[in-house]
Image 1 (tube, rainbow over the protein chains, first blue to last red):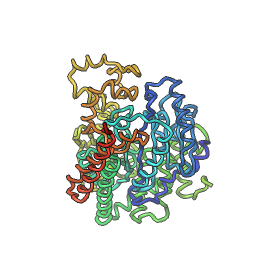
Image 2: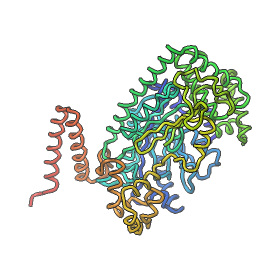
Image 3: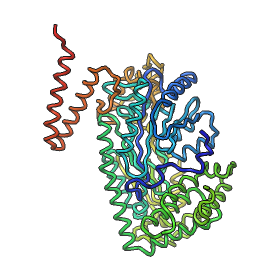
Image 4: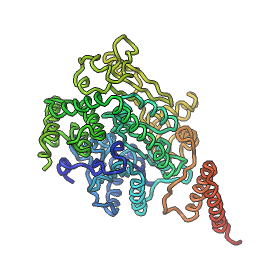
Amino acid sequence: MDMDDLTHTSGEWLRANGPDSDIVISSRIRLARNLAQFPFPNRADDSVRAEVESLLRETLDDIPVTNGLNYVDVNTLENIDRQFLVERQLISREHAESHGSRGVGISGEENVSLMINEEDHLRIQVLRSGFALDECWAEVDRIDNAIEERATYAFSEQLGYLTACPTNAGTGIRVSVMLHLPALVITKEIQQVFQALQKISLAVRGLYGEGSQAMGDFYQISNQVTLGRSEEKLIAEIKDVVPNIIAYERRVRNTLVKENREKLHDQVARAYGILKNAQTISSEETMHLLSSVRMGINLGLIDDLEIPTVNELFIHTQPAHLQKLRQESLESAERNVARASYLRLRLTGGDVERN
Amino acid sequence: MRIVFRDSSPHRHATANYDAHANIEKWPDMKKKCSRCPKPATLHITELREGSVSPLHLCESCAHEYLSSPDAPEPVSDAEQVSGKMAEITADDELEQLDQLTCPSCGITFQEFRKQGRLGCPNDYIAFEEQLIPLLENIHGETQHVGKFPKRAPDSSQRQYRLIKLRNDLRTAVEDEAYEDAARLRDEIQTVEEELGEFDAPDD
């Protein structure tokens, strides 16, 4: 698969066509699986890692995935291409920074990614736009079944699917929903959400998962428990709580509009203005301003910009994407100039660069 | 983990030496003072740890100091969580002894596992079973898998797994007072038990 082909496109999950996609960016379910006959990747030497990769890679060739799977050999990729895949949410940071034989199978629409030799031998991930966990589960379950017909998973009656980290044992499932919660952040009411989620042992993470701080007011809500509850139950627990958070965010947005319309409109319009005019801009500031603009569109305060474009800009303005777009390696200060230029182009000059 | 956010105001964000007062009146509850000095707070930090949430409001310079100080807690990764919990539930002198344990399959020692928070192979779950069960219970609150199982398992194990799942569903149904579901599940459990009985005890 040619990385450069991906540069000008974006994943289906960014298109904001799923349910509640004003607030829910994406739904994701991943399963952690290991082959019974091999040590886990961190304990495997080069030859074992290579054997696991070739075995699983062959298996993936037989898996019926919509639009087919493209395999990327992550080990031989340039650093910038690895970073690029991380920014697109197709591989994890850990997978990018690891070593030795490893790779990822990516579906045509970027809805499915199968990481080989990450923390576990296999991580099956399905992404969907909006709040669509049932669709994610149906797809990930189907792929898992198809692989399982061809491979022997490490499994025990008592402890379920055996994983490298005991925090994933049992179902090996992580169910997560990425939410955009700018109004709850403005009013600090997000802290109530954190508290409530902590109590029911759900985790809150930033845009790029484990250890990443919240950027652009994005929060990922996911399960922590994986053992002793069925996949359906774990999914249901997230499905029960997310509508409350969505309703909370909408309520606070409405209150802000009602009570502070001018100030809110001012904030949104200034954010939009900076993005359209800045000559140099950091990634952090871009995320922050895009967040305001995204909320502004949803509230009808901006009417000449579409949500999918903003979703895409969150990803395309990140360091590796910018460098791939410019086809050159850029230092941080150069990136800030390139980022501002790209934003001006996309927000005022139409989609010239994409065509 | 830690969550940090700034007062939401686009042009304040653009530069480090902005006028901190410029937008304070924008949102009424934003007039918080820095908890460490008299300046207005512009960064709001939430530390999430062990089920407790502590909010912290700081000005730019105090926040910088706080975030870069070496004793500021880092977000906890899964692996760190494992190492931490293991130390929490086991006495130090006991840990020293356990550290010598070695998995006969992959050769990982218990100490290596504790340090990196990752196991070496599926067999570790048997080799370190006595130590892992309390850890799993601490992390997940349960030590019996319910849910999906590989379909390639032998037929009788499949039924065993199915029984486990049905019993768990029954428990949930009773808890939720879904009595119709509970009655149906009881019947299903009985059927599977009868099938298993036939399977396990063929005629002598």
